[in-house]
Amino acid sequence: MTHLSKLIWALVGGVIAALGSLAVVYLTTKAPDLVYESFPPSHVATTSADVSIYNVRLDNLGNEEAAEVQVYLALAGDSLIDDIQVTPSLVAIAYTKTRQNDRAFLIHLPSLNAREGAQFSLLVQRADNAPLTVEVRASGASGRERTSNQIADVSAVDALIQIIPIVFGVLLVIGVIAIAKDSRQFLQRMFSQQLQALRTQSVPQNSGPLTDKQLEQKLLSTPFRFYYNPSYSLDKNKVLHFGPDGTIPVGSNKNENRWRVRTGLLEFLNSREKIHSRFYYSTADRRFYQIGDPDTAAVATRGILDQYLAEEPQVPLVSDRSRSTRTS
Image (cartoon, rainbow, N blue to C red):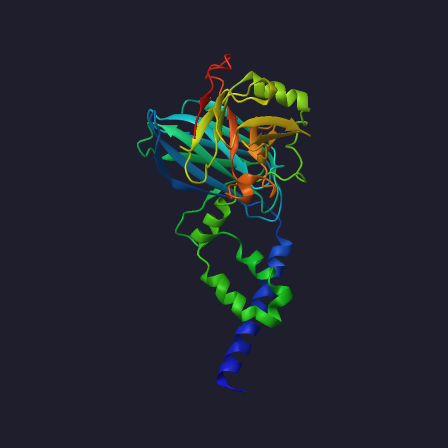
C-alpha cells in the first residue's frame, strides 16, 4: 500500500469517526436555531427619488420547528421605509407584516420548520446608510446574528450526515468540495431563488383562493405596479390599469396587450393573442406572482421568471379608455 493510499484511508477513517460523533450529537439534540444576516444596503436611483434597498436573511438552521417567530426591523434617523417585501423559502409559509412606525416593521411567522427561512427586502427613502436594527425572537428561542465573514452556518453536522450514503465512493472528493465552498456563494445562490409559484403549491395559510369573478373585480378596482424584470432592477416597473373586456388602458405594449382570468390565474396576452405571462394571486400579501410555465413567452423566449404586480391605490384609475397610454 502506497503512502498516498495510507493517507487516503486515514482521512476516510477520520471522517467516518467524525460522522459517527456528529450524528450522535445531532440525533440527541433537538432545538431550533434562528440565524439572521444583514447585508449592506444597495442604492437605486428612480425617476422620483434615490432609494436604498436593505436585505436581511433569516434561516432556521436547527432540527426543530421554531414557533411564533417575531422579526423586528428598524432604521435610525429620519429614514422612511416605503415598504417591505417578505419572501419565504416556501410559498406556503404564512406571515403577517405590521408597520410599527415610519422606520420600523414587525413580521410574524407562526412557524418556521427546520431548514426553512425567509428574506426581507426593505425599500427605504432618506437612508444615508443608516444602520439597520434586527431582533429575532421565537417561543423559547432567540435569534443570533451571522456575519458575512463567518463560515456558513449551514450546519457542518447536516452537511456531513447528508453524504453518509456515498461516503465510501466519493467521500474524499465531496469533503474537499464542501470545504472549498464559500458561505457568500451559498447565500447568493439562495437569494437568487425568487418566489416561484407552481400550480402544485398551496395558497398561504388562513386565506382561501378567489374565484375568477373576484379576481376580475380586484383587477378592475385599482391600478397595479408591474415589476417586469425585478431581478435586474426594481426600476424596471410600470403602472397598469385593467379595463373591461380585457383592455389595458394604461401601461399596455406588445407583450402586455390584453388580459384575462382563467381558472384562478391572470394571463397577459401579447399582440398576437398568445399567452405572454401567467400569474397567481397571493391572498397573504395581495400581490400577483408570475408562474414559470414554459408555454408562456416570457419564460420560453426571455427567461424571465420573477415578475410580480403590487397594488398601487394612490394612482387614480383612468376611466376614459380612449386615453390609452402605452409604455415599452
